[in-house]
Image (cartoon, rainbow over all chains, first blue to last red):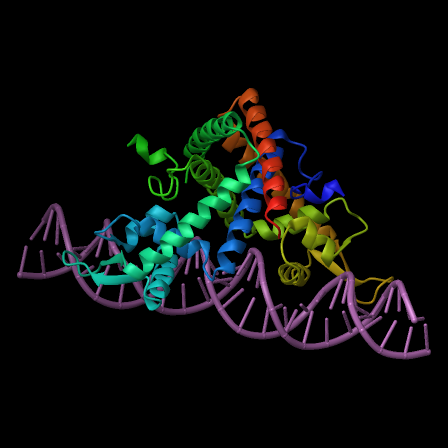
Length: 164
Length: 164
DNA sequence: GCGAGATATTTTAGGCCTAAAGCATCTGGA
DNA sequence: TCCAGATGCTTTAGGCCTAAAATATCTCGC
């Protein structure tokens, strides 16, 4: 019965014969488990992670952001941002205004309603994350953070070496 | 210009005031960067990660798996597996047979064509992963692997504590 | 044997995401 | 001035994923 709590790694046993792949599968497994947990909790509150991410990017940017900046900040495609922002605007959480400087561009700002919604979700969100990492002491957390920093540098190098 | 290689973390600066959230955002950023890279490379070969995962689960299971087992192995919903398997069957990479023991169930097996396709993709896949972690020495990789093990245990504990 | 609930799967409706094509507008050089 | 290419955004077509409802079948206790 204590197996019930173990987090499973995709294709455990198959493929995992190379250490780099084993590392990647474990990384993926941890991330997906957390992400699905967070997604589920958001959806219980009628929200989604993607919409939350948009609001987070807009938070404390009183002056707003245009679509391209949002797309870059969120690491998602332009078309995706269009879709998310239009729905957020329909729901009154953001407002889209034409850019005075460039008629192709629009400026997206959070509304008061958006700010209120974001505030509530953000508080819940970091409580959830806190709970998921609560089993690690400060040293273990810092160690993981640094190790991920190593990975991050390695990824940047690896991507640079193998062209676009 | 050297900023161009830096991997960005979502809502850098906002939200990241709690160490647990900073850790989570870095984890997410590393995972997403690798995953998108892998996705892109698969799609250049006319494949997708989701389909690859199904084939990987079926690999060296000569006797096949039923849909539920696949769903559990891949950590995705039943409906999702139905859809993926039906398309793989259409493309001749897997075969769906009725279970002799249970008329509700079906047994999915990889075909020779599927096995061939999987072999090629699997080889490429671990080369890509190798390249992405090549910037870390063996010690750093082992350290990250262990640190992710800590996280994994913490997640399991955290989920257990906060009910389903 | 039978029926209630469990189980295996599929269907449906809908959200997220991308690449590529298309449209509008801007900008810099001839 | 004018226009070619760059840029900002939207649309389209399509893949991934989920939760919940619907089907079909199984199983177990009476």
